[in-house]
Figure 1 (cartoon, rainbow, N blue to C red):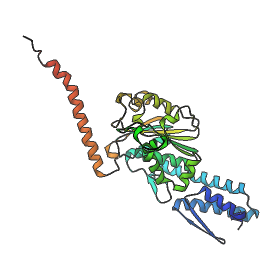
Figure 2: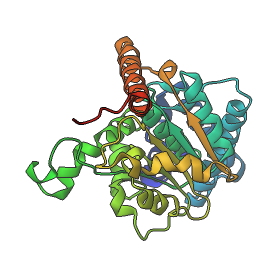
Figure 3: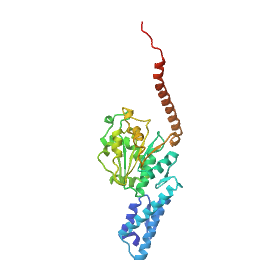
Figure 4: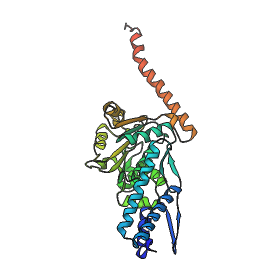
Length: 328
């Protein structure tokens, strides 16, 4: 079959591009398996290729590449238009499911990321900040809006010593980066993710490894940003090159730095909120999507912190009003 190419070369090119779709060819029959959205895109590719074969009587590799680019670009524009109209909470379609924005805070993250190149998502644990940010980046990669994703985390010791962990440096820092691997694993097939990692299409690195780089056509995610110092935050934000976007996520109630005031995430709103193209989204316990108890746990800790802050503020007042005792 001419559409398949010599020794199925055209078919392999289509399989390479659409790894989330299983393509089985028997004779002149083709069976496609995957999500409805992905299958429809591949069906369009085959329909266009059949048209070219019927019209020209032949098909070249450059024709296959051109058809794939046109179909994917057209589909991306259609999806973007649908999402911008607000008719759908779908962020990215995976092979088995669709990742959706489930809460008002997550929907604001999606909306602000379309309008601005840098978005800060600040909120407590369990609000889906990291997962939503990764989904937005994967959607941009699939739509060819950017060509690579760089995910970074500060490798701050949260009660454990890196020196006592087994293995080399990469093995020592992997536990800090595991949530990013987990999120990607839900959205990209293991085979495709391995390929992306090997080709540096997707990088997961400690924040310190970002120094000195300029990232063009990239989507940067800085996770756990509350543990980035002011200088580290500046360093990360200034890595953006042409056609680059970034989402910064963090929880200011979980700072592991020796001095909490050193956190660049606390400082960022004061310094950057007036800059056009930078947006801040603040999530709260209403956005929690984990176990039902997580919201109550966050509430309990918040109330305790408010009580201690009130006592601390009231202490100087009491000291001033208390009469001084005279020594005899």
